[in-house]
Amino acid sequence: MVFHYFYILRSKKNGKLYLGSWVNWEKRFLQHNSGTELETKPNIPYEIIHFEGFINKNDALECEKYFKTAADWLRLKVMFKNNLKIHKYQICLSRSHLV
Image 1 (cartoon, rainbow, N blue to C red):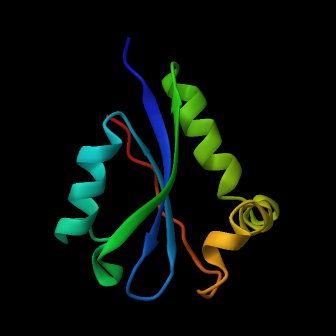
Image 2 (tube, rainbow, N blue to C red):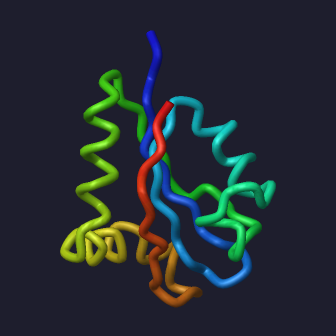
């Protein structure tokens, strides 16, 4: 069974968050930190602060879209209040990429 993942990265440089989805989140995480991705390159290095696995690709995409809305960005701040309290609450919204 192949899982599709929704993940949240936090920049160690400035605390900005990046939300994405991908089949192999570990490989994607390495790509983000390598500096080859335009959306995340300015804020490397990143750390993973959350990931969720889904059996269905569309469910992973819907989760990503759900959390990229303004109202649910506020929910993320509540969900990760202890993890994010040292950084400014900012988010990097970009198009999702899923293999």
